[in-house]
Structures are given as structure tokens and as C-alpha cells.
Length: 232
Image 1: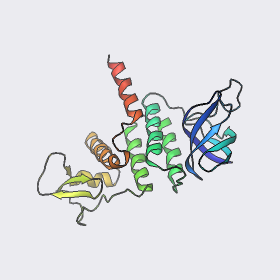
Image 2: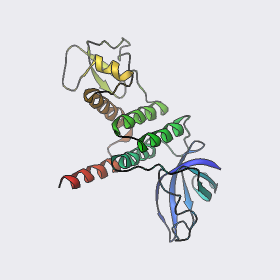
Image 3: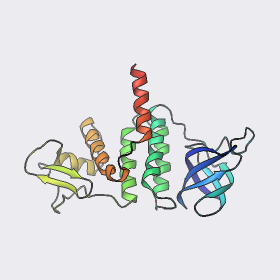
């Protein structure tokens, strides 16, 4: 059996689930959990997001059939913003990784992120860290200490950001530019104030955009709908 998490599931035929799993061994993959929607199914309770599982499956490479699943520990209890943040993390893995693409260390970082969210009072630094870790695992990382010309980031300089080439030195401050001193703080993952936290959020959104494409994130829309409902 292999450790795994449920990323998403949806009804399949009359009594089964199609489940998108994430594991260290196989990366992201799909399987059919036959009969899991029946009231007395031994799998209905454990096949939930944020529950650490041990699973085994068999069948074709593209679509497996679940043979066994059991919880290997307590579910990570995510509530409020942490819950929607968990859905966001799951959607990033779904959208940015290919099927059967195991990436060394990503499963560990994912599980650590769920653990941090389960204890969090502030979710933003946790999400920014996972976004960067995911980009790094996928080979889309960029240099925080040097600009696109190879020169060291200057604390007194100003830079625009490009997802493809990193930080581009500007002659003067311009709309959307980042201060060099802020970039250097972010290189140490210093998110101790609102200014750095907002800068990191902007950079990560720009860095992720080419790989996410134009399709909106469902988890982000769900979160914004929740905020709108609370405000009304």
C-alpha cells in the first residue's frame, strides 16, 4: 500500500466515485472506488480530502480500480479560511501537475502544508510558501538574488517581475515595480509585515499565471463567494 490523499472526487455511475488521488509514488492519478457511495461502504468515510490514507489499486495505468483504502492518521481539521486554503492547495496540484508525474519532495511539502493550515492563525504565509515549493518542484523557479542580466539584486534598485525571466532592473520606480530591499527580504522568506506579504502575493500570482492559464480557480471563486455572502 502507498500513502496518498484525495484531491477531489465525484460521482461515477450508480454507486461509485471517481477519485483523483495524490501520492509520493505516482504523483496525481485517478481511480474508481466501486460502491463507495453506498451507505455501508467501508470506504465512504475515509475517501475525503485532507485525510492521510494508505491505499492499493490495480488495473490500467490511466485509470486504476481501488482495492483497499484506510486512514493512516487523523484527518487534518481545516475550518474557515484554512478549509478554503486547503481546497486551493489541492487545486494547484491538480492544475499544475501532470497525471503520473511523481515529483521528489512535493508529497512531503503538501502534507506539511496541510499540517500548518490545521494549526494556522494566518494562512497567507503558508500558501505563499507552498506556491513557491510547487513552482520549484516543477522546475519553474526563478532567482531571488540576481536580476535577468545576472547582476545581484540591489537593495536600492527597482525591478519589474516576469514569470519567464525573473526580475528586470528598472532605471527608476515605475507602476508595479518592486523595491530591491523587499525582494531581498522575500529571498529569505521574510513575510513579517503586510508590505512584504502583499509583494509576495503579487509575485506568486504572476509566476503561476502562465501555467494556470485563463481558466479561473474554482477554490478562489468559492472563497470570494463566501466573503460576499458574509458581507451581505
